[in-house]
Length: 307
Image 1 (tube, rainbow, N blue to C red):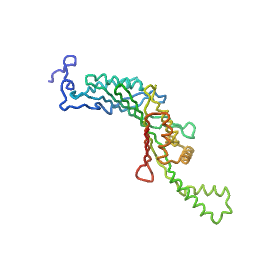
Image 2: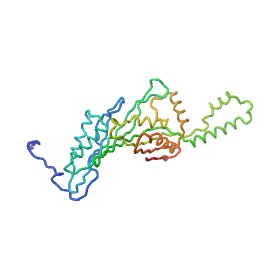
Image 3: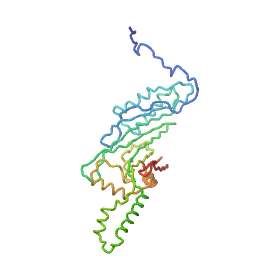
Image 4: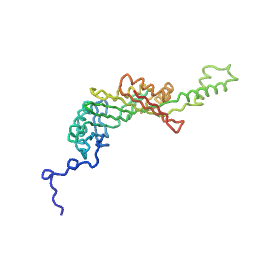
């Protein structure tokens, strides 16, 4: 028979992180936990502000002889966000301060925390009334405190469609050449109805290539903000690109989307410049990474901008 197990109140449990010393000296920049599952509630005016997040939480360990930190203390300080506390810039600053103070015996002076999740936003169809769906946006909120200074970074990924300007020009040339060839001996009988009929049957004689694309945007959030402004940032990104991915689509919506693509031909350079121009006046620490997952090539086209 196993002996009865003593409770924590009747005996002292060993804590080697306190009693033992590090065998090899040297400070560490980050020590903590990654991929912690936690439901969080955002301070955003959206239909579903509660999301499932993966959290990373670390502190530094500058003391060369301290064997380890108290990871359970970091974990416990995250739990209120899984209950009722809203995730806000101010709440992040309090959390970071608490993470550092909880490791005073480890001489910790810096802390970092990140929340990664998928944000779902309701999106109406382009034309069809009452038709809608849900667009997903990968988001990361990362906050760091060092020397009593807090930096909060927001990173979001937005999908869109891109149509190649070069391919469009080549396609238009082939269509024009085919038109001239078809009517070179019958130009006297040309009228608007004849041209329209020809275009209906032959305007796709050659078509430009387009592809799903992605913009990864990173900005610094004002520590005094009441929220993270996720929907505002996503709105600015999609307004700059003009061709965000759609959800509910009927034929009239697909036609409208085709018109948007035809009116917004863009190289990867064009997309990056549109975003930098639209976002630079509103955000500091702006980083833009654009990827076009080409249908012509087996490789991707990329462009970046850093403020």
